[in-house]
Structures are given as structure tokens and as C-alpha cells.
Length: 423
Image (cartoon, rainbow, N blue to C red; front, top):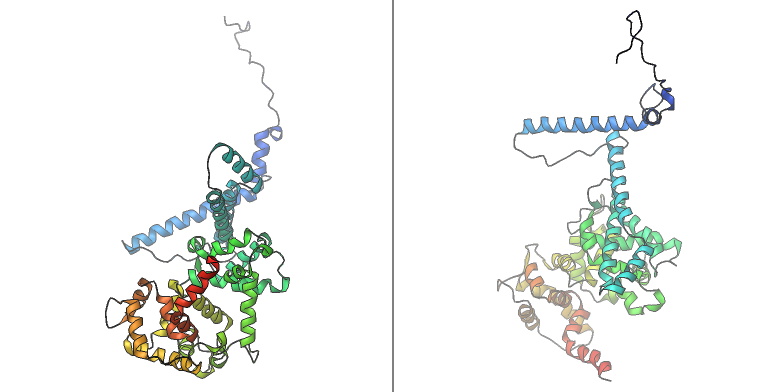
């Protein structure tokens, strides 16, 4: 029933007491986010700025699309260093990579997982470990990619290698004074194989899939004492190999100028390389100095590393491409019988000087043709050398008297290699 006063007026129900706003949790959280009330907090400012930037980008893209019609845009200007756009981009990249890194198992978790898997099923340890290792490598390289374009520049690759050194068993005791030079040498192999157009940057995806990274990670597995001298010498990334390269360059650099002249490079490999090949290396792979004439050109340390990598990897497409440019005397993209004759003439001269038997240049030329079996019987292309699977041997025969000697004595050398096994 309705009850009221005798005079007909209603009485208001008792009012609930409202607590002060400052005591409410959601109010405190809101003020923490937006500030004291006088202005927005830093987080709110960043959110608003981010929305504004994204809206401006969207409007600009719409405007350009309307102006250009159906023509796509191939160039996007990178944000300026220190700008809000640049900072937002770096923050987004950091958060993404941090999230990806957190998803990876640490060493203890990974070991525990392998124990459980071995107890319950048959697994391939190498596959799982390699996947984790590649994922971690990709995250590390992406963090060093300053402009986030998916490529690493030389100093970024060197920084990645420098960060790996403490974790690689064979490199932990490297002298501190040699670390910078080692990183320079090691990084150069990645660019030789992963930057074929010499643009000065290597694609991260190519680096991850290259044999170079696997070769570098081999230093992870065993201590240097457990690895033979031959294995150390064959691995470009070993400390022994890096020191060998430095010693070799210093020994050739007679005038201590920091670069090699043609005369100094002729002493490489005990002087077994031909004169015409050295000339062609300088023509094709040594840049002219500023204001210098052709005769004043000298080979820098980086060019020397390319030179060594090509000669030590003649059977790879990258090494053979480097050498083919030197063999192609006329720059036509193919070799003729006249080219083969000119190239081998210097080898023949060194061959006779070494006291070997007389041989016919025409016979060697015909043998090269039989080994390559070019698609066009009148010329040999780089594709022919790659397809015949003997391109490295052919190149050695034409530029190095020692390479020709190895081919000429291949049967005896093969027999010597098999004899210890028979014993």
C-alpha cells in the first residue's frame, strides 16, 4: 500500500552516500592512464599520436591512389630518424620480436622436452634443435636490421657474428684484439654468397637458408681441441682459417700499404696463377681508385677476400661466376676456342718452366670442350660450365698451373687417396 503523510505530500527515500571519486579503483586507473587531469598521460598521448599517424597515412594513400589511378606505388619513404613515426615503428618491431622470442623454449625447457620425447617416441634431435636455432637467428638478425627492410648491411652482419662468439665453443678464447678483424672476415662470406649483385646488403631469408650459417654453427658443437687441423682449415669461420687469411694478406703486402698491387698478388699460391688471370682479376673485380690511373689500382682487403673465396669455392655458382668474368676475355658472355687458347698459353708456359713434359695446347682445348659439352658447339657459356658439373676443374686448368697438374695426375692422386683405406 501507498503510505503518505496526512497532508498528501510524499516523503523522499533516504539517499545512498556516494564515496569520493578518488577512492574508486577504476577512477585511479583512469587517472594513471590519462594523468592528473591537467592533460593526457604519456600512454594516452602515444595512442592518440599513433592513431593520428595511421589516419594520415591512410588519407595520403587514398589521395595518391586517386591521383595515380591503377598505377601501383613502388617506393615508400622511410620515416626520418627520431620522428614519431620512426619511434612508433621501432616500438612495434621491438614488441613483435620480444613476443616471438618469448615463444621460444630456453635451453632447460628444450632439454626437458627432448627427454620426454625420447621416452615416448622416435625423434630426430637435429631437426628440432635446428628449427629453434634458425628461429632464434631470425629474431636476432631482425633486431639488428635497423631499417626493417629484411636485409642486413655489413656492419649489422658483423654485429650479429660478434654476438655469437661467446656462444661458439671454438671461438670463446679468441683474442680480443682479433675480434673485429674476425667479424669482418666472417661476414664477408655471407655477402659473397648471399649478395650476388654486390648491392652491399644480404637478404635475411637467404642468410638463414645458406650453407654459410650452417658452417658457422658447426663451431657450436665441438671444442677446437676435438677438431682436426684439416677440418679447421676447411671451415672459413674457424679461428685457424681467419688467421690464415690475415697472415696470407700480410705476407703478400710487401710495402705494408694495406692493399695489393698486381705484382704482389702474383705471389699468391706460390706464383702458380697465370699472368693473364691476374690482369683479368684487376680488370673485372678491382675498382679504380679516386683520381688514379689503371696501373695505380690496388686490391683492397675486401676484394682479396672475394678473390680467395672464389678460388676456394670454384665449384659453386657464386665462385664460378666470379671466375667466368675473368675467363671471358672479350666480355661477350661466352668463351671461344681462341679464348681457351689464349688462357691456356700462360699455363703451358709455366708448365714447361716447371720441367714437365711437352704438351699440345690444341689437345687441351679439345679436352675442355669434351668436358663441358656446350649447347652451342662454337662457344662455352657460364650456364654450360654450371651444367657440366666440372666447371671448377675447367677454371683451374685455365688459370692455375697447379690446377692443371692436379687434373693431369688425377688418376695417380685418386690412387694415393685410396691406398691408406686398403691398408
